[in-house]
Image 1 (cartoon, rainbow, N blue to C red):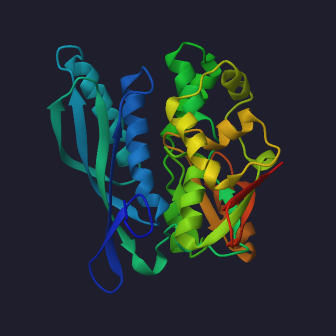
Image 2: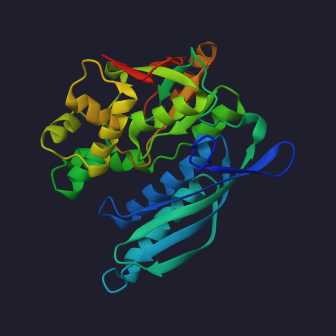
Amino acid sequence: MNSTTFDDAGIYRLDRHRALVQTVDFFTPIVDDPFSYGQIAAANSLSDIFAMGGRPLTALNIVGFPTDLVRPRVIAAILRGGLAKAAEVGCAIIGGHSIRNPEPIYGLAVTGLIDVRRLTTNANARPGDVLVLTKPLGTGIATTAIKRGAASRPLQKKVIALMSKVNTVGAELAELRLVRAATDVTGYGLMGHLISLCRASGVSAEVHTSAVPMISDEIVDLIEQGCVPGGSRENLVATTVAVDWGKTDEPQRILLTDAQTSGGLLLCVPEAKLEKVLGILRQRRTPCAAVIGRISARRSRRPLICVKG
């Protein structure tokens, strides 16, 4: 993580215009199918590069398994999933490292290349920027339901496809200089990542819950059934000092703080460029292109973010 902007990837300048962008991420299985798990973990790792406007070049596998419990063919399927997803975006997996571990882990250490003139950090948002989200929320709730056997087959299929989709469009938007700031939405949930963006940029924000998309209406039922990961509940508690939740109910708050795996991009778009950005997102068939709020001038006192209906 970049220590000055709290971005998820670090930048190492090579010359006047070019820099390396580097990140690492891995996690335990969140779905049963090993190939899908490999795809999701790889997409999640690659997204940090795209969120900052870079293009991935190479990656290293990070693998840990209890060898007495997990068969080699399962490990091979996971690695094939990661390889397929990396190949999809032109990233070469050139090696890696494996260890024995009490529970399975898999992910990638990724190196990409970026033009420093087109870098999209989370520290450049400006008042008036429109907030655009490229994937619906609810993956943490859905994957918890999958583990408990409470998710429907259609929801399982939908959430796996969603988490497997790479945020390639982030690099395209940065290269066209259409986005002022960006972050991907992952473990800290939408509100956690927006708080970091606001702090890094010295701004505040408004979010409209009615505009925030979720994966399926089934998500609300799952929240009411208690299918909420511990990380999401922790995120909700952590946001209380920075968010004015207004009249939102608990399910809405949980959705907005749900810990996402391989979530979408949260883009800060100058209003004059909004229609062009939305057009590109639709052309690239991003899961959604939702206008969910706006950046405002920094308030003299907390909260940083106001949530409205």
